[in-house]
Image (cartoon, rainbow, N blue to C red; front, side, top):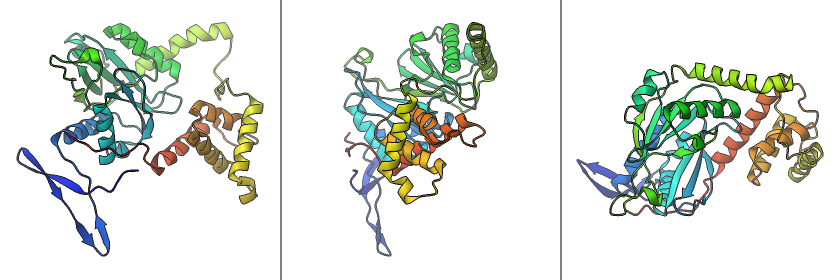
Length: 351
C-alpha cells in the first residue's frame, strides 16, 4: 500500500521547490502528496485534457513493456482516480521502468463510442481532411515524430463490437491507417508519458514523449452516418445467411455452459452465505455481489455476465431489458471494486 504523502511542491515563476507541510487542526494532520519536479505537472495536465475530451465512466489502463511486450497488470479507474496524484506517480514509475502506458474507454463488452485510428507516417493534411469529411477527432496524440493516434467519437452510446470494428476498418481505409489497430477494443496511448518502443528512440537514445496535439470533446458531425452505414453493411452480410433478426438478449459466452454457470452461481451463494443471511433474497443484490466475487477472482467480464444470465435463479425474472440489466450490474460491480482499493506497489517519483 502507499505510504503517507508528506510534502507538496509550490511554484515561483519558472522554478519549483519542495515544501514540507505539517498542518494540524482539531487532532488530525493534513498530509499532501509530494511533487518533486515539473514533469509530474506535464503528465497530469496531459491526462486531464485527454480524459476531458473523452468523457466516460471508467477507463481500462494497461502498462505494456516496450521491449518484452508483457503487461504488469491492468486496472479500471474513473477519471477522478486516474488523475489522482498517487496514480500518476505509479504510472510514471512504470513508464520509467520501460512500460508504455495504454488505455481504453471501458464499456464492459461493448465499445464506448470512441474509435481509434492509428496513423503511422501520417500525411500532414490528414487531420484537415478528416475534419472536412465530418470525422473530426476529439483527441490526437503524437506517439512519436510523424506518427499519430486519433480518437473519433462516433456515438454517445455504446456500440456493438462488430459495428465498432466495421467503423474502425472503414476509417483506416479512408485515411490509410493501420488496419491491424482497427478492432473495437484496441488500446491507445495515454498522453504525457514516453514511448518506450526501441524503434522509436531518438538520436542519443532518448524516448520521445506521447504529446497531446488536440483535445476537444464532441461527436464527429458524420458519426451517426458511420454507425448507420456499418450496421447496414453488417445486416446485408449476416442476415440473408441466417434468415433471423437480432435477439433482444445476446448469446452468452460460449465457453460457459448452463450447468457450469448454475454450479458457479450456487457455489458463490454458499461461499458468501447469502441464503443464510438473507432468507428473502433480493436476486438483483445477489447478482451484484456474485459478480464482484467472480471479478475479484479474475474471471473475465464476459464469463461473469454469462454466469449471471445462465445461473441466476429464474433469470430474466421481471426485467424488461435483461441485456441492459446485466450490463448495469457488471458496471456497478466493477465500479465498487475499482473504488475499494488501489492496486500496485508504492513507488517514488525520482527525476
